[in-house]
Image 1: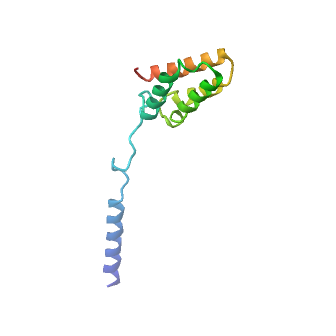
Image 2: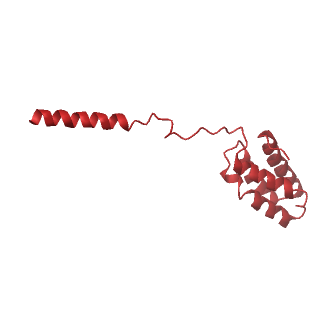
Image 3: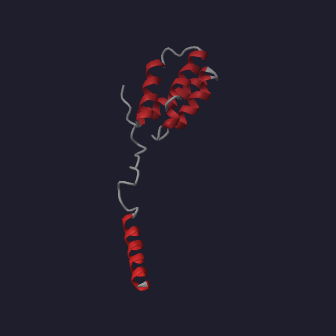
Length: 116
């Protein structure tokens, strides 16, 4: 009797182990292609492009950087999140610093495939 209970218990454990295998593709997150523009990156690039020409004062630049950084930090696209930090720092700097920061962010968008 004990022998058959042990056999049943072992069989149940074996079945449980087989059914909880983590090899199924349903459980694995999809790989992210960091070279492609994701939704957060697209929103950040769209906001930047829409308001860049109007950002001529320091306050307007700061406002634009804040708007871009609403989305960009969550982007998994190469360089979008990093260059949005540069954009934020450049917004409070000189005109030259802003130009470099804005060019850096714009290039990251273009490199990721962003289109106007």
